[in-house]
Length: 120
Length: 131
Image 1 (cartoon, one colour):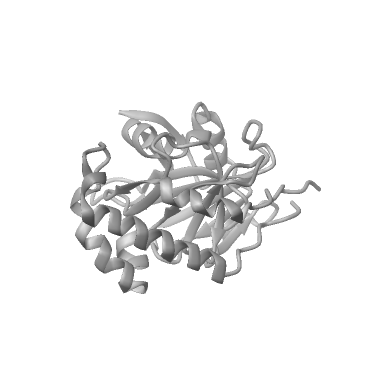
Image 2 (image 1 turned 135 degrees about the vertical axis):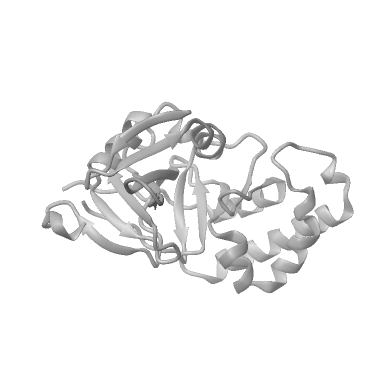
């Protein structure tokens, strides 16, 4: 079952499963409890997109100032793995989401708000 | 422009690690050390290898998280890998009597010393700053 389904800024469908939401994201990052809408907004309208250098199919999305207090001055980080089934369109799946102070060293910036859309 | 607020990390709370529970999510290859009931926190990148989870108001360390734990991290730090292999079978999401196991206690000591030294010997990664 899907906790939510939305579309990333390139129009690719992204699913967050109930299992992933309950047993990974919220279980280990309780600051995200009740923040489904903020995670969806970050997927739909990120501020920055990074490439995960360890996983070619994973992108990291960041959006600042979106979480409720006391995390309102932090970033929301959402990792999405993209898979292309043999038949069908590319789809994304949330891996994790949590509050953070900044980017992980080594992640590669590939797009930020205000840049030409084609760089995504 | 607005500033991302970097909570002041309280390194004096690094001993909290001694009391943390260990959880390994093998479907995502993520290692967690945190209180038995995880606390809300913001994550601070430490050299691209560890997320230190800290209380945004006090700066206290309330957990740590390592992505790609077996596939990347342990290959880089084989000393920890050896200890991990002994205790991994004990490390499930549901708590057991693993704390009475000698190898478990040994791993907790090894883990504490490793991460204490890692954190103290490596500079932290700066945040995004102004947006």
